[in-house]
Image 1 (tube, one colour):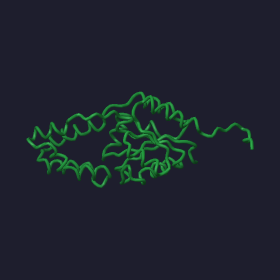
Image 2 (cartoon, helix red, strand yellow):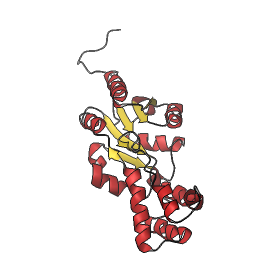
Image 3 (spheres, one colour):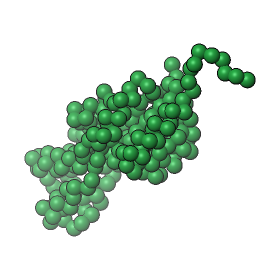
Length: 213
């Protein structure tokens, strides 16, 4: 069945509050590396992890090899990565979205990293919050690629024009609109909740009577 209306949300910066923690620079200082070295050495690994072309084990092995870390250091390094990645839950917005269940289609579309689904399910139960979660590391492509938005709509069986997409990155909002979705740039909870409510209030209502000609 095609959903009457749908809301799809980003995770990082929307459902999760994810300020920078400075973990990378701390590791560079610890390892006596110039600023930017970690991303220079690991950039292609981060990209591969975001589209699922490598496994978590592969990531750990590359961290060890490229940064010269032993096994305990690799575990500590990756733990710091996940602390920043996962941030803290945006409780107010999560609570609001939870209250929408049953009234519309609900989904998540996230640029992600291998291992994100398991960790976010354990910490935040996003798998229970929405009907479908589309992660970039599972579909092999990231926002703002049109295929990412098309995959999210297909997962929820919703036409793009019936869906409101919420993201904190303007490029992703523009890309969603380019494929026919409605889209909202997340800046705060209050504005986002108003926009979602307005979107759902525009749904065709079934009254039991034929519309007047």
